[in-house]
Image 1 (cartoon, helix red, strand yellow):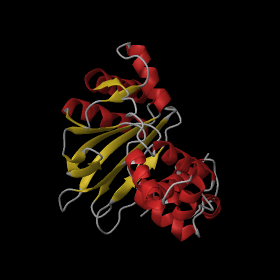
Image 2 (cartoon, helix red, strand yellow):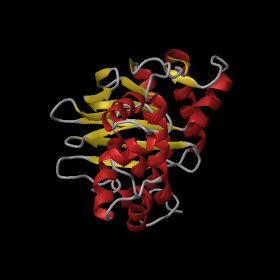
Image 3 (cartoon, one colour):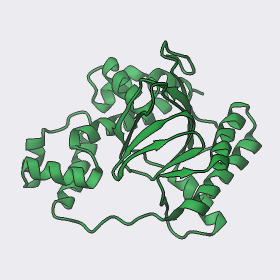
Length: 279
């Protein structure tokens, strides 16, 4: 499947950036068989479903989003996604950075500190249309309209469905070990230790560390590591690094290994992702 090509199943996707909208990634797609494994984002997710049904797996449970609804996900919240009906789903998604959302929140003056969405799924046909129109304006090269619509969409969701970003829960026993384990894995993406070695180095047991890591980050260490590798690969590809070099740099065995995990998590192949950010 190419950047905006269609597969035999009718799937297509475009994941790109518009130079006039810094701090934003855009994804417009239709998926039928594709499933997104559990992963998280550095920034926010505002997804307007335009056809079919998307099933989103969140720590609080599974939600089903149809046309006229908007899925809202805060930074670092683990989630998965798949089709909720045989014909799949289509959507237009905005991935604004923390700085972009915090900046809009400061401008509208309704929130202090870092904002967070308080609803995962809202029925808002007008809001859904505005998100879709951001894509149309960007694709048409209309910077003034795209920027205006983007700020309007973010402000609308913040004003109606946000509050201060929820504070982390009280640290339980093992939380510090989980955070230390994450730091070790971040520093050793290409050469990670085994769970047993990691636990030994931290002075705990493998099962205790596994349980603590799941509670803290919503996924086991090996799943988190794959997601972290893909996030690092995204930054390298955006900077112009060839996929084969990016694969080795982040710890995948080869480019096909990167292709498989990158496509599952991001929704497009690494080559298409890089081309959309070239120049």
